Image 1 (cartoon, rainbow, N blue to C red):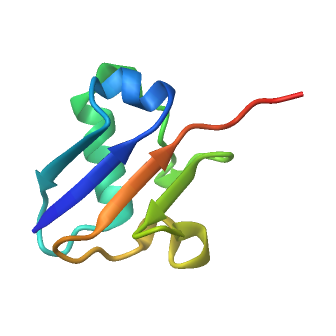
Image 2 (image 1 turned 45 degrees about the vertical axis):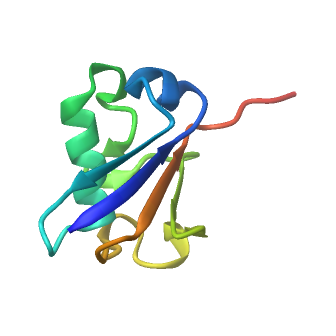
Length: 92
């Protein structure tokens, strides 16, 4: 299946583009997508997952909805879904 990926802020810098479409297995989950991205891009290694779960303070959306309100890293994906990845936001 094809998944549209969107990257923001420092993650966009690490990937080198704002958006891309990538093919994954039909039974892929959000966690599978994030693990694949960590393996493909040195700048993302260890930034997305920790012990198989989405790292704290990271925002990952499936079709505009935060996956923490679904099944977190285990959230199932379907062909044509969009996964957006936002790094932690710092402020003061």
